[in-house]
Image 1 (cartoon, rainbow, N blue to C red):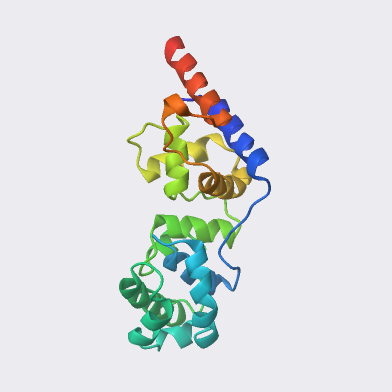
Image 2 (cartoon, rainbow, N blue to C red):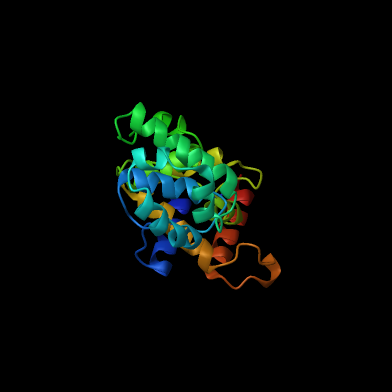
Length: 216
């Protein structure tokens, strides 16, 4: 595995490559952003951004969405994966936010994860993007990069990836690191045959990993 300082170096190399990047989900109110993140599970941000303007034009506030018919919401978000469950979850979440939380989105991981359809990844994204908290969300791109560049073992789960990145990166850089790794994953494949690899950062990380293994 790469050493902590090598991981930090690699992430900063990615930042130099892809340039400044930020959230790709359209920014709205904290509640609408929460709903967008829930919808983005196992779906692309592009697909979510196509349906949310229609969804939020019709249901802008929690009280509006909580009273929506599931079939109507499904019709709007049907192009997004798992739309049946997501429609039910966002209506239930809207109900909780309005009736129990006075229309205020929780600012804690525990509070967000108690909402229907919101897991740890959703909580970390919302806390980072909306509330500027030093959390780090792990999606498929982040996980694939972390394993291919030897940040973590190939069998590491998302929580292990999250804890590793959080433990090595300065807290103030976690927000940028998350979005940088996502953009880097979109730009480069992490499934190329090592023998045919042309990505110089991946090649360098392979070399560093080999050197580290020899020294252990």
